[in-house]
Structure formats: structure tokens, C-alpha cells
Image 1 (cartoon, rainbow, N blue to C red):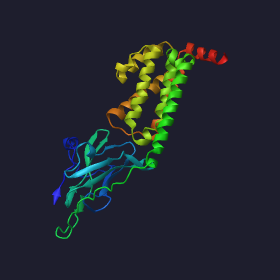
Image 2: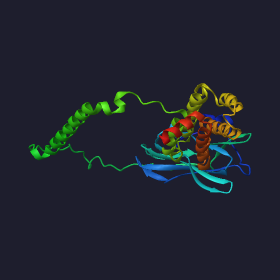
Image 3: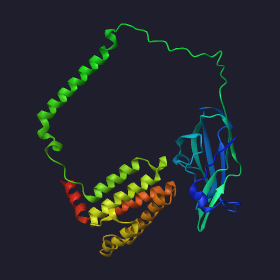
Image 4: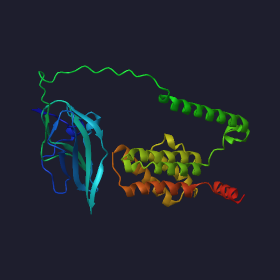
Length: 325
């Protein structure tokens, strides 16, 4: 019998929760099965029932905190299972396998809990146990046999004629493409020079739409989603207002925006939206906060309308002129 510890160092630092107060999140964990054969795949799921404003962090098993002898195959993102009023049920799942037989006692799983001024470690009520069985092999009866050599057969034309035709077709298309490129390259703008750069707000809007189409939050990649939004806004602020936002912190950006705000180029509503968006992005990137779908949509539209309503007037006039022509 082995006991495998999966307690993260960060959780040791804050201490162990002996008893949960009313309103404290409830942590439960369970294996998909209680016994497997060596090499079988099985899942471990940890669920937390909590208030929607409380923050809980799961152990990072795939990042090196997995038990000895257990191999993590897939680290699934955190998922929201149910929301009822202020109560929310979230879950974290891992796909695992074990290659050594035995009775494994993995103990109770921890979860880091933060709420206002509270930092604590919550534990599952029951210890996790799983039995790993092996195959019964009779070495006297089950003797290994040599691998049979491949059967030699004569090569026939039909085996490679299709590839030959395909190769000739590709070569013909390539030759025609090169001929057309040489003949009409003077009519292709991309070969005659680089296209003029897009205006700051057009570039920002296109990048925001492309980012949203990647559906990163739906795949649990919230940090990449909010990093993408803030990078697009930093580039826009640099090109539109001459603010070196790429090298600034969120607080420094808000301070720098006060100049165009005082000049009437950024109204109070968009200023507040930008400040809130940057604060939310910092929580996601540095505090591992997991926003919901409404937060993700708000972040996109706050960024979109900030760009749309702060673009230079001369750019809008130029675009209207191009449409009329």
C-alpha cells in the first residue's frame, strides 16, 4: 500500500482547513472507477460548490504535482457545471493512467480558497483510493514467438501508376502557375509594392474580430483571450494617441489616457470601460480568476466601442470619401 501526496507547496504555506465555516466552498473528489488494470485510462474529477464571488484554485497535477507513479495524460480546463442563484458548481478533471500494480491511497485532495481576507486550504472529506491489478501470465505455457517475416511479392504497375499520374498533374499545375505569375505579375499589386498600412482603428477592429472568432474562452484559454485584447488596445493607443502602452502597466496606461481625455478625445464612459477592462485582464492573467461568458462578452464590446468611439475624425472622413468615390 502506498500513500501518494499531491499537496502543492503554495497550499502548505497557508495552512490546512480543519473545519469549514458556513458558506465555505465544499470540495468533493472521485475517481471514475475504484479499480483498473495496469495501463488502463481513468479520470479524476474534483468538484467545488461555492458562492459565485468566491475564488478557488485546484492543484496543478499536470505541472509537476502529480502523485508518484501516476501519469497525467490530459489536463482538462476548469468547467462550470451549474449555476443556481449565487451558488456555482465548478469542476476540474484529469485523465490518468498507472503502470505499476498495487493498492494506491492518494489521501484527501486540497483546494486553495480565497474570499476577501480569507486564504485557506480546503480538503475533500474522503480519501481517494484505487486498486491497480495486473495480468496473470503463465511463463511455461505463454511462450513468445518470433515475428513472421514479410511476404515478398512482385511490384506491379498498378501499385504506383496513381502516384505517377498525381505527380504529373501537380507538375503541370505548378508549371502553369509559374507561367501565369511571370506573364501577369505587373498586374498583381502584391508584387509591385507593399499595400498602404491600415489606419489604427481599422487594424484594431479587425484584430479584435479575429481574436473573438478563435473562441478562446469557450476552450478555457481565458488568459490568452484577455492578453490578446489588451495587446490590441496597447497597439491602438500607441498608434492613435502616441502612448507607449506596450511598455506600460495598466495603472500607467490609465494615467496616460488622462491627456486625451482632457482634450475631449476620450469621454468618461469609454475611460471607465477601459479602466475596468484592464483591471479584469490583470485578475485573469495574474490572479488566475476565471471569468464567465458575460464577462468575456463585455470585455470584447468594451474594447470594440473604445476603439470605434475614439478613432481620429480625419480617418472617418477619409473612409466616407472612399465610399463615395
